Image (cartoon, rainbow over all chains, first blue to last red; front, side, top):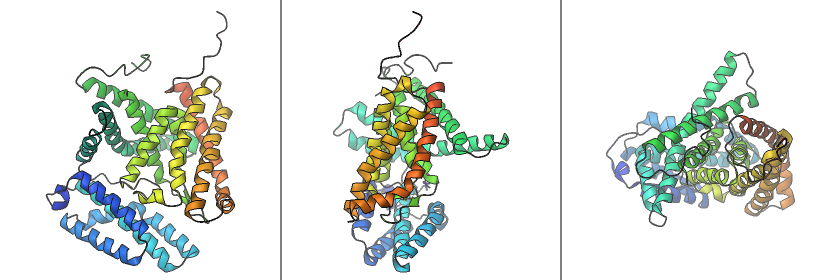
Length: 211
Length: 190
C-alpha cells in the first residue's frame, strides 16, 4: 500500500523542504475532510494533478500508487452505494484516491532519509539530542520494516504450504512474529556495533541472544 | 532509550502497518472499519510490554498522521483522527499500554487463558469504552446505537484475542522480550 519508490528529479516539488511538504499534506488532507464537497475536491484534485505534472511523475507510477487500494475503494463504493447514493459513493472514493495520491507524491519526491532528517531537525529544537535521534531512528526503521515484515510473512506462508499445512492464522502469525523479533535483534546489534561514541547501555541485558 | 528498544518499537509499528493488507470491514451504522490491525495492537502490548507497546502504537499513528496511507483501505492523513474511528485509533494507544501492563503484572502466571483474558480486557472492553462514546459524539448518534452498531464485531475481536494470546504464550516461551514487574514464583527446593 505504501510505495517506497523514490522518483529522482529536480523539480520544485522535489526541492521543496520535506517539512513543508509534510505540513502541506497535513493541511491538504484535513481540509478535504472539513470542507466536504465537490468544489473543494475538484480544486484539490486539480492542484494535485498540477503538482504531479511539475514533479514529472510518470503516469505508470501514479497508477501504481493507487492500484493496491483499488479493490478496497471498489468495496467502499459498493457500501456507500447501498448506504447513501452513487454521488456520495463516487465522492468518497475519489476523495480517498486524491488523498492516497497526495501522500504518495510526498514519498515519490522525498527520500526517506531526507524526510527523517527533517523530522529529527524539527524535534531537536525542543527535545534533547538523544531523544530526537531515537525518535528519528524509530521513524526510519519503521518504514524499512514494513516491507520486511511482509516478506517474512510471505516466507512463512510459503514454508507452511510446502509442508502441506493449511494457511491457518495461528500457524502464520506466530512464526512471523518470532522471526521478526529475531531479525530486529540482529538489526539492533548491527546498529549498536556501528554507532560511534559511548555505548548506550547493553544491547543484550543478559547475553541471552548472543550466539 | 536503548537502541534495542527503539528497534522493537519500530518493528511493532511496522507490524501494525503490515496488517493493513487484510481488508477492513466497515460497521454499517457508524462507519468504523474493524481490521486485522487491532491484532497488531494487542501483540504490541502483549509482546513488548506497556511502555514499548504503547510507544509502538504512537509511532504508527504519527506515521498515519503525517499522511502515510498505512491504515487498512489505504487510509491515512490527519483526517482519520477527526472521523468516527478517531476514538478507536487513540484508544489503541491505551489498549496496547493496558495489555502490556497486565502482561507484565501477570507474567509468571501467563498462560493461554490469562493472555486471552488480558487481550479481551484491554483490546475489546477498554478500547470500546473509548471508541464507542467518541464515534457517538462525532457521528451525532445515541451511545446505545453506536454500541449496538459495534456489537457484530465482538466475535471477530474474540478471534483476534485468541490469536494474540497464542502468540503471546509462545513468544514468552521461546523469545521473551518483557522483563516481568511481578516477583518471580517462589523457588522450591532451595
